[in-house]
Every structure is written in structure tokens, then in C-alpha cells.
Amino acid sequence: MRSALIAAGVMGMVSTAAFGAPMVSQDQFPPKTTRDLIALCSATKDDPLMVAAVNYCQGFAEGIVETGEAYATTVPAIHKPFCIPNPPPTNGEALAAFTTWANADPTRLDDPAIVGVLRFVTTTYPCPHTVAPRTHSRSGR
Image 1: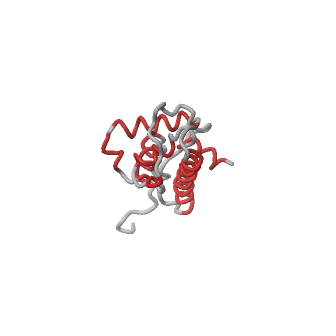
Image 2: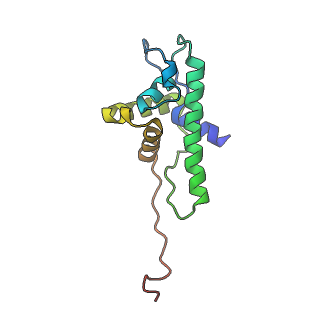
């Protein structure tokens, strides 16, 4: 399923999570900030909430990607917000890229989680802009 692969590529479970990462807390469900989302996506095997955190992370990312792609197909006049490459990045690559991107500007960590993901995918995977030819002028001529 393409959307599941894309979502996994965008935010999936990571095997490269930092050792000694803080444990996930119940307060991070649902993630309020990009910082919370990174914590959920980076949960380690020794975290009692790891399965729930990683599953939530994957579902959250898939929902964002699916919504963005569906919106672009149902409203043809808008520019597609992002274009995930084919093949999509691996889970570890995507999370590492997202984490690096978010940490590059610490103010991003306090953005709402959905805003963080949308800004990441739109800046990391932009679509080429094409301008449709105009068929008539504003004056009606």
C-alpha cells in the first residue's frame, strides 16, 4: 500500500533512536508539539510505551500524508503540497531527516505537531511548479 509506505517513509519506526532517550509519557498522546511527536517516533525498545508511541507516530504521519495527497486530488486547482520521492526514504532516514530539520531551528520544536510535519514534507519534498496557460484575460477579451 503506497500511502502506508509513504507515511512510514515520512515518520516511521526508527532503529537509530538515540540511546538514553527520555521515556515517553502519557501526556505526549496526542502530540501537541513537534517535540512531542519526535519523542513518540523515537521511543526505544526499553520504553514501556514504545509500541503505542511508534504506532501513534506512524498513524499520525500517514493521516497527514493521506490528507495532503487527497486534498490535492480533490481540488485540482491547487498546487500539490508535496511530492514524496519514489522510492520513499526508509523509516530511519525519514525520522533522522525530520529530527535534524526540526532541531535546526529550535522554534520549530514548539510548533503544533501537524504543522511541523507539514512544514517538513513541503520543504523537504517540494513539487515542481507548473503554470497553466491562461485562456482568457481579466477583462474578458
